[in-house]
Image (cartoon, rainbow, N blue to C red):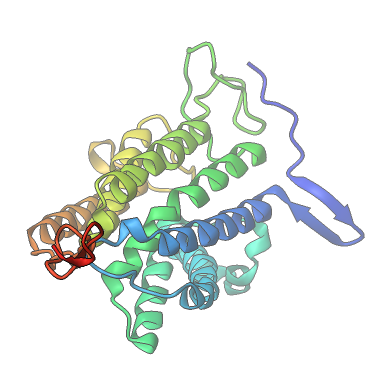
Length: 294
């Protein structure tokens, strides 16, 4: 199956170009922001604890998250995948328009941004992390679709009927692993987290939603690394491991610990609902037939 003839540039005006990849980041951040504010406003999700932040505080957090994604994602790509440019071409580090972003680096950047923001605003790091990770699959979905449009991060050779011949990847059909990741890391993981937040009401348990995200992403990424072609400039690791696998394994361990910790922690009692006052339950209510107390 031939790869569709996508142009990675949506619009070009003079020297300025708007790329699908940039739009994917914008869409993921904006939709994630609106999703989180919707969670904040939905009172039924906060039966045991009030929402951990106000809508206004989430509005301020978006700038911190954006910086964490960009700076962390770029530095993660440099130090995890192309450390040689630090001494061969250090200026390349800031040329983000040349491509090269790491999810794991972006995740570390977002984590640090959340810590700094919560310290500055005296908020609960675990509960804010739950909100941020609840919307993270939205950005992952758009990012993987952008990878596919760019014809990058393709999969290993395959004989399956939906294998694609990617430009620059040789004549063999390959797994469209970007679409696999968009489905698992984006759609499936979002649905799992949606159940956790709206079905099981796990936003009341500190760190559990974040733990589910970490475990879910790690399992999806580790499994799909088996069909994703490793970067050509990466060394060959023993036992068939890849850098993505090794970076994801600690995420699964931390996520499992967060789930265990959050489920073990006692929930505060739900506030009692005010009892409805009726004439039958009020001994001083007047009997309408005699106009005297019943």
